[in-house]
Length: 344
Ligand code: SP5
Ligand code: ZN
Image (cartoon, rainbow, N blue to C red):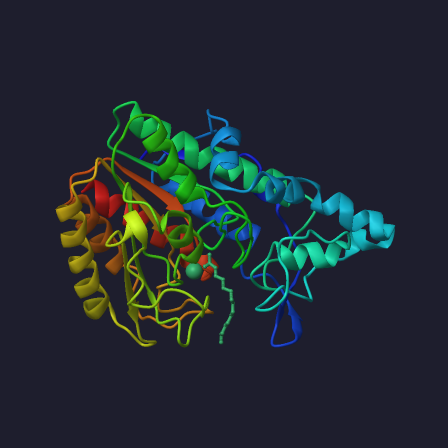
């Protein structure tokens, strides 16, 4: 499969995150994408650099004030104290119910809380560069489909589907899959689907398109009653206004196996067929894998061929956009299994 590889993914290299109050190495690591690239190359899939600039569509889908914050966040962090170079900023306060979110504070950590949904998204020196280059890869993938090609993979990190119009979270900063879908629409398509098969609900993507009928968003994920992102992704979230009926969630309990997961995928394929879209954007998370360290489904490496094959049965131009997956060693194999299953 044709693959766009983000040039700067190694620039996002935070050293630690917090897990149960303890500092732990980042689950979302540089090595994840290193292993995907190795597996792509070993199995004969060529990677090329992004050839489109995502700036325009980033400013359409994301709040320009948030984007400006992301671009300058590391400098603002260093301006507090040069010794911060060796540390990472985390939010510690949020504007929840009854507090105001319409006045941007001057305090950097308070701003970070305003623009974050969690304290689990480490920000480092090169985060903006990596996120922008990942968005360029996703937009390049969309353009590749617009040029008449049938399938494409955007290999990028950090991931995107938890990021909303004006917030980061869940290791995500810019919503790459949403940017790809918006690009397809801006260049003339009338209807596209985003199918999110990451273990975690794509709350950012859902929220970006919740009131729209030109993007059908469907997500298969761990039940948010017990799994991140907790506050969105329930089965009764169907869209609002014009968008009513164009949002479909399939939450599944911890322990869900491949057969049970496939039943939800079959339903999603029927939903997609009824919508009659012109293209398919897949938010491709591989954290549904049995050995994933932060997730609780039991899908095996060989099952991922079948996932790709099922998706191909829709016979739609398809852009795969990389999301999560934290079993670092197996991640390359699992990604390429999906892509090759699609091509079979
Ligand atoms: C893109 C993506 O997959 N983001 C996921 C963000 C998940 N962040 C929360 C991590 C919480 C880890 N809980 C682990 C429980 C393991 N026993
Ligand atoms: Zn995930």
